[in-house]
Image (cartoon, rainbow, N blue to C red; front, side, top):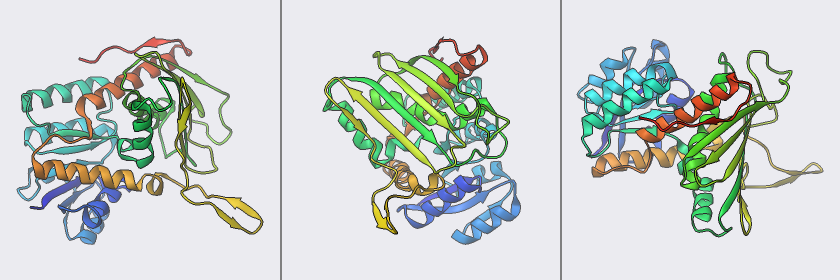
Length: 332
């Protein structure tokens, strides 16, 4: 059985999903692609033998679409996911689940009412849960190989921020990965946050960059997150967990070291595509397998998506209040 998938959004993220589903994920066939840009939709659709559309709701209602990937603009997520739930079609929504906490809550309530405790239809694309390095780090932490965790240090640095966006979008669009990863690593929810910033980088004018965040989880672990979207030097994701008896950290960004021309080292990727290629492939594979086998997937849940957005909103509240400590409210 091949799961017939429709993909909404044919930008960089959507295109990556389309090509992965077509080329490297077994058990899936891309049958339709929808995007506001008709030319872009048609081009990617032709590449994989699918139909190109401009109407995402038309895609959701098609009889040759069994499941949907939502990779369109954040502002469209809530309505599109609700349409998928109404159509009773499994949907993988890229992060964030929705643009606001209220929208996330509406989606989660609708989803839980629709499934009535059955197999979830909705999953959220926090792909770091499938990255081999993060998976190994979680195993190390869970096994207490370095003792009980005390501190987590995270860094998220990119070459340049995308077009548009502001200081708050840095949190909801980028730091949101750490807001999901940290409680997943520690098996403990974030209960308190604060936001801070250095002087702004000269490379950017319309947002505070870099940003610095403190997260405290329910088990008392303190996490630091430095977010620098215009670091310039490369795409660089770091995570270290310091425990009572040792420390463990990601070995990325490279798997090889090269000696050449009087230099020794590695090269950074320019964006997330090569760095998290395995994570996206493995996540999509698990999603398709769960649909085929009729079981709950191991992807982030709808409530995970809501929780990350609640933490993001608490950080934005701290930002607006000059960096004060803010308690994270329990969703729903």
